[in-house]
Image 1 (cartoon, chains in turn cyan, purple):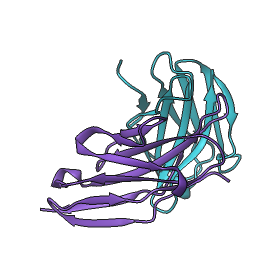
Image 2 (tube, rainbow over the protein chains, first blue to last red):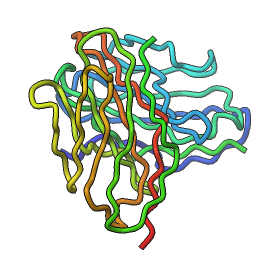
Image 3 (cartoon, rainbow over the protein chains, first blue to last red):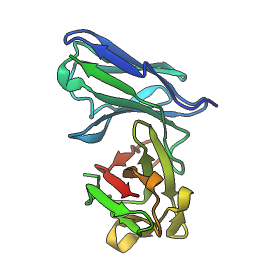
Image 4 (cartoon, rainbow over the protein chains, first blue to last red):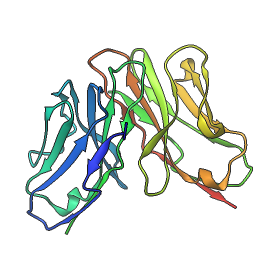
Length: 114
Length: 115
């Protein structure tokens, strides 16, 4: 398996624009997580899905952020409109049935909003 | 609230020195514990994990960690570090309740090894 695949790897956009980050989890994994990493706040869990259903989105910073998982092999994280403070590295991770295994991380998307 | 604390923000060591990075968790219930490493510019990779059994867990690259339940700790150790161990290290924990778990990370410890 190729692991968790995220695209794009780097994104530079202007303030106010819509940004869509994409993630393909490892096949067969039931859980998918979106994390944001910044120098100031470290790694923050934004939202996670179980079997394509959002379970906990309490980490989503505000209504500008939304996440979907239309099927087991694809998820998106959308920011609309984007702001400079959204600049961060966004990681997607997936895991088999939770309980006795770890999460596997993608390479991340470095987002810069200017 | 569930939380994971890493008290060392930045550790600087010389090659061959011994390493111990602290991690404490605050959870009510049975926990899974992890250490992840993030090399510069890369994604997080698992170093080791603890679910149950022997509290001394051995991971990759000579790392080990000890689960001490009474202290709510899961410290990471390595007897002799190398320059290539320069990275950021994250402790993480999750509750072992099916369908109601999320992985919570500590703030990370940046490790710099001086040749």
